[in-house]
Image 1: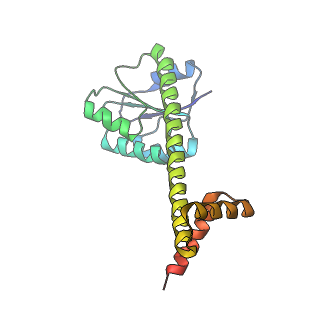
Image 2: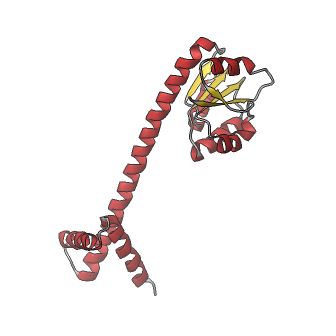
Length: 193
């Protein structure tokens, strides 16, 4: 059962939305939060999805979403009456998964939530693959730097320096990048006056 946090920055009642979601089987968390309290409530309640009902998302709302998205990303649906294209782009950049410009029809909630969850999961996979690729690139740079140090210090060719790194990694039962990190750290110590 998905835990849903409602957020509103309007004075209009949000009870109908809450009731519709509860009838669809979602676990509704506490009372609706304000955008200013979003990050704090997300940390405390750990919802699975966030639904924001707003006339037009304010800069404060978008800033709070960006902070939350950087530290604790969640699928975010935003229902708004504002169809401004720049505002929609800003909302998506801040972490909004789905931005809907229309009234909330209860029969549309479940499919909209499912699409938002699927899109969020796909984006999470892409972020994970990007992080993995960035880590692999950083490790390759570290290995190349360690090879250069060995080539300079021991007058080795590049293949010989790489073979020395591999042999040391196998002897220590550690990853090649860890050996490279050790060599680079030792090389930096030797370079200091």
